[in-house]
Image 1 (cartoon, rainbow, N blue to C red):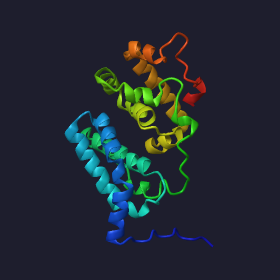
Image 2 (image 1 turned 135 degrees about the horizontal axis):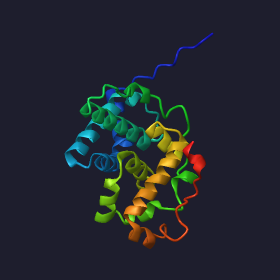
Image 3 (image 1 turned 60 degrees about the vertical axis):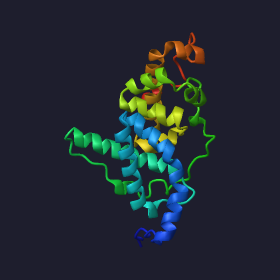
Length: 214
């Protein structure tokens, strides 16, 4: 006998507001930084963040306490960005936001110590420390797909698995895209790369192989 999916219990407005404030609002700064580096415009970034929170509030009953709020919000923001881009490009396809309703509730979120959250090539802290004008300019000049994976991994610290969920792509594609994005960024910042130790002789392999393209 098949069972129909269990309906998500309805929260009272007071409980919903309390949980929304406590669990999702602490992500605001990171969410805005992500939005700005996608749009490269303060007004667009603010609009994108506002739209993200409106959608998150609408679907909040589907967010399970204790799961990865940051990844959940980043996924919504990424979809909003794609939809806006498609709208401006007169492309009819839309992301169905109902698909996010239980996206992170079916699996346990990996611990922050996951091996995919760091790299031997461009370490997160080094990127955070050097995100000055030159680095920001080089990062912003990358195509959006490559810029996004650098932001998610090296600035925001997502694991490969979390990035795959946020971006709706296989983990192998995440690894391949990240590898190419770092090489593009390294080429643009050769002097900075050498000072950080990831532009030294023999570098160019961050532990990935051609199999990552599969």
